[in-house]
Amino acid sequence: MITLKAWAKVNIGLRIIGKRDDGFHNIETTLSTINLADIITFEQTESDIKIEAIGIEIAPEKNLCYLAADVFKKKFGLNKGVCIKLTKNIPIGGGLGGGSADAACVLKGINKLFELNVPDNELLEASREIGTDVPFFIKGGAAHARGRGDELKDFKLPRMSLVIYWPGYPILTKWAYEEYDKTFLTPRPETDIIVEEQKGKKKKAKPSFKVVNDFEKVVFKKHPDLLDVKTNLLVSGAYIVTLSGSGSCMFVVVDDKIRKGVLKYLDGIGAQYFEVVTI
Image (cartoon, rainbow, N blue to C red):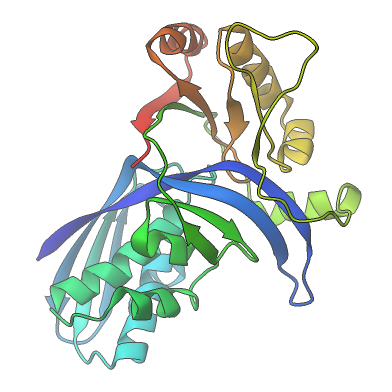
C-alpha cells in the first residue's frame, strides 16, 4: 500500500484565443502547482478497480480516478486490480484542477504500486485520453500552456505565497466556456503576455500588475459577490487578485505586509480560504 498527494494548481492568467474545429478552445495560460492536495492511497487487489471517495458525492465509475485506472490497465496491460481511496481537500469546481490532479496521481500511483517503471513521457501520453488538464499534473511545477491547455512549456517560477478564497460553491467550466462563446469570443493573436505591468502617467511606489483572466467577464456577471470580494481585496492592499481557471476560487499574491490586510478582510466576512505557496 502507498499514499501520494495530488497537488492542486492555479492559473496565473488565462486567455481564450478562439474555438477549435474539434469543439474545444485554444487557450493560453500559465500554470503552477501549489501545496494544497488531495490524498490518495493505493492498494493491490486481484482484478477490479475499486474507488472509495471521502468528501465527494459522485458515482465511482464517473470519478476521474476510475477512468485513469482503467486507462492505465488497458494501455499498459496491467492484469491486476487496485483499490483507490481518495480524500478530497481541493474544492470541487473551484478552478484548482482537483479532478485532473487526482487522475494524474492515479497514473503515477499505479505505476509506483506495481513497480512497472513506465516513463513519464508515456504516462503523459496516456493522460491525454483522460482530460486536457491532466498532462500538466504528470510533472507539475510551472508551465506555459497553449492549444487545448495540453501544449506545455516548462519554466522555473520563483516561489510565491498565495491566499486562495473559496466562496463555497462550484462553477462548471463547460458553463463558463458556453457563456463566453455567446458574447465575448472574438479572434485575437496569441501572446505570451499574461501578466502585464500597468502603464500610467505617474510611477507608483509599489508595483501594480494586471493579470488577465477572460473568464472573469462572464463569471463576475453571474456571481457579483466574487467581484465584490476582489474589489475589497484590492482595497485591503493586494495588487494581484484573480480567478483561477474558470473559478470559483480566486487567489491573492501576498507578502507579509499584504497578507495581514487580506486575512483581516477575509476573517471579517467569515470566508473560507487557504494559505499556500507555489511548488
